[in-house]
Every structure is written in structure tokens, then in C-alpha cells.
Image (spheres, rainbow, N blue to C red):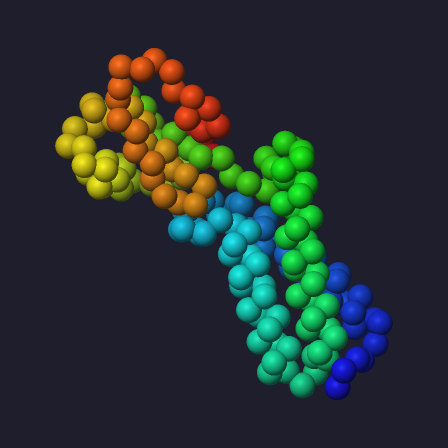
Amino acid sequence: MFFNSWIDLLHVVVVGTMVYVALIVSLRITGKRTLSKWNAFDFVVTISLGSILASAFLSKTVALTEGVFAVAVIVGLQFLITWLSVRFASVRDLVKAKPTLLLDHGKMLQSALRSQRVTESEVRAAVRAAGIAALEEVGAVVLETDGRFSVIRNTQAVARSALQDVEPSGS
């Protein structure tokens, strides 16, 4: 089977777009830690493409054209979102999380820890992994958008320009 109907292709566009948006919203609501080392777009595209390919390969009811078209829809949406994100801050803020400051000058930021579902023990482990024995030696610990912790040593430098895009606490 090569082609069923134009209605089936329209169905792929509508349902594919709705599921894509729902998945992005769900991932933004559940937070950065859900994805561990992936960002939301890596996760969505990888899972979506895998599912589409599995359906196209295994389902006798999905025409080849529909499978190829579904892949094109996902790739097109991915391109559109990244293109818009680079050009418009409002789109970037809507679809991408910001890094969050969890520890500032040796002091744990409890509201940030709670909102990001991170324990003090996890922050201390990140500090130890950075080879630092005392929290007082730490200028900042940041939960990055991919779920990693960045540990920045206290320095004599007053400027903290690397922390410019980091949320001080909360989401």
C-alpha cells in the first residue's frame, strides 16, 4: 500500500501537531529533571521519530506516504520551533527552560530546591564531584536545562557574567 487518501495525510498533520504540542507542554510542566541529560527537543524528536518509524514498519494500516509525511511533519515542527526560538525571545521563553540557581555563595536556596525537586544531598554530591570539600568555597550551583549541575567556585572576581541567564530561584 503506497497511498490511502488526502484525509489520512491531513489526519497525520493535525494529530501529529496536537501530540507534539501536548508532549512539549507536558515536559515543560514536569520540569528539567524529567529529561536528565536530554533537552525537551531531543526527547520529543527521538521518541516521535521512533514511534512513527515503528508504526510505518509494523502497521499494515499505515501507508508508506503517511509514515514519510509524519516524519516530515515532526522534522518540520522541530525546525520551525528552533527557528522561532532563535529569533524571538518570547518563543524561546515559552518552549525552553532557564537554568536555576540552587546554591549561592555557599547558601542553599530552599525555594529553588523545592521547585526543582532537588535535595540538598544532591547539591552536595555535585559539589563533591567538582572536587570541592566545603560549600563555603562554592560561588554557585546551577541546575542546567538538561538536568546537569554546574558548580562554580568562589573567586575574587566580582562579576558573575556566566550566571546572567540563570533564574535566581523558583522555576
